[in-house]
Image 1 (cartoon, helix red, strand yellow):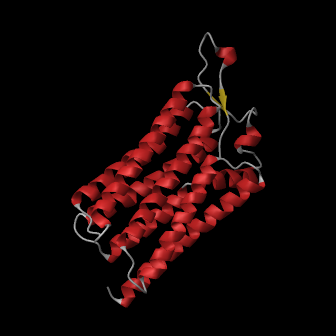
Image 2 (cartoon, rainbow, N blue to C red; image 1 turned 120 degrees about the vertical axis):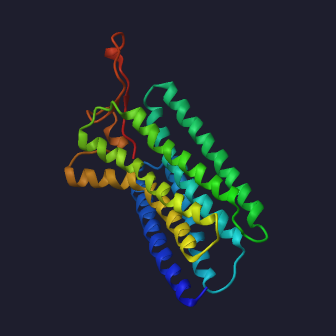
Image 3 (cartoon, helix red, strand yellow; image 1 turned 90 degrees about the vertical axis):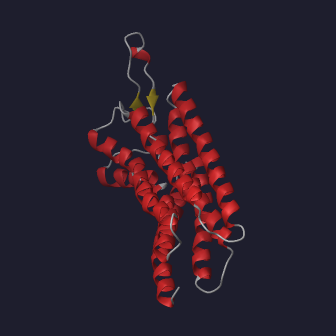
Length: 267
């Protein structure tokens, strides 16, 4: 590649990575300050570390040659660690719902994420240990697992909280943060198609954008709810609104209308 290609790749990748890192640092500081740290924040911190490795690989790659598997593992792991952060946000909400089927569904989704994560790492190690030449199988596996995972992160909240007792604007706000996972799918499809042919500058740029964007999206729920509270003077913080009028509720049946379950919104 030419120096101009390296420069373009470095600039675009650095902007996205640094922006995602700043969002994550802000999220962790805010959650720590409010003493609301939980497992989804631990996964976000892990994804942050992996994204730092991706950025270092980007800067180092413009100067010296690094083993291809280092970036391959870091890139894959930051995307899936960010998804784990998002699904653990859903888990914390469903744990307060009192509805066992929702808890089991989120646990199954989590296990499936771990299995898909491991499968992709194994596949990439097979093709990238000595020389990273993406095969059609690896590209197809990446696209399939990404679509399934992002679809799960959108479908689960929509199904669980479609009857939430929230205002229309609040629902749009919350569902949009999970719906942002579609942006990852939008990048995954062209990126995987390019991998069917060869690795180019554009392919590498998309890989870095995808990793950074995944990290940024996993912070949206925390950041958006904070902005909502500041701008609209209403709290959507899960630990502050538990038991308040702004709660998620299951559909009451005729026999259990007085004992309907409430789910607090989880940042």
